[in-house]
Image 1: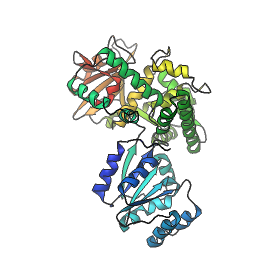
Image 2: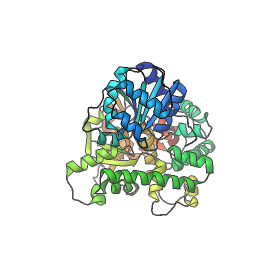
Image 3: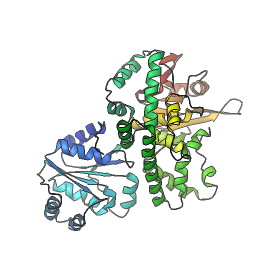
Image 4: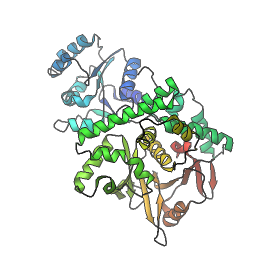
Length: 446
């Protein structure tokens, strides 16, 4: 990919370089195609005198020979310099081990490379593949690990050349200042473009190059096919692939949890399913929200890991997967989605993008359901955020609102635990009593 996008994670790489000064290696983990290799090389190019990228997915035979002699550091470094035609300078060069999961020997040797302290080291890889390929080695403690997600909405705006919108929105959010209906309509259209294209760098690059949403959809399909292939490798039974492909229908089904049995049938043991779910979560292609049995500070202590919702890690991929039955998503579908005129319920697309934005902002996902007073239905809080020693319930609606019964009932039930209450929707910023009504494009500020 020729285009280099500005990414927020770059500042975290700078912090690592300054604070660690070579005392740890940096491991960048994340889903396939989120831009890990690109940002690592861009950082190396800008911040070091020289660098070498060892891509273990496509390394020449000579590299594997060098790895076989890695305990002799002088020889290993000399061989790398000759193989790649790059001179390394002590404390001024970095070696990038790309797709590190394909070479467990080097992963295990990181401890000794760091101790040698001649150079800095950056590793990139999929967390799932890293775990699968390091089960028989000693995992180095000399690692600083950071997670890379698809491009968030601000990074998307940067890619489009817009550096003004997000700071202005943040100021309005902090001052609780309404934007006006005409501005909100324009901002929502801009935001729906982000939902359609998504945050995968290759999809964004395709959009910028062609301005054609069908081309973007084709690129997203390639990424999804790659994910499905990966799932097939970790789970030849096909269960992980089927669960992944069923995410849109599960959310659209208006259920208060992912109904595994409706996708896989009732066979299979609980422990095996727990392992499969953990592997899907480790792939970072999905975001899983767990039911909080007792919504309070320390949500993870009260989570029900057998009851969950599953979202795609990228909403652009979610929309493509939702229309997977077509050979390619027609431009007309995208145009109707962009104009908010598609007859299909868009509600769960908004729920997915809110899950994506909260995850990118560093929140773990939890939700809460409980029966109504007459027992005929359930109240549901879509997301619960932990803030200090309080919690913030979040309800998501795909349009305007008439009522917010779940938030009202939650307030009655847990009033002493609540800091702020949010309804995320598609209208202007305002308050309704003590509930803050927040346009969906402001989710990152919650």
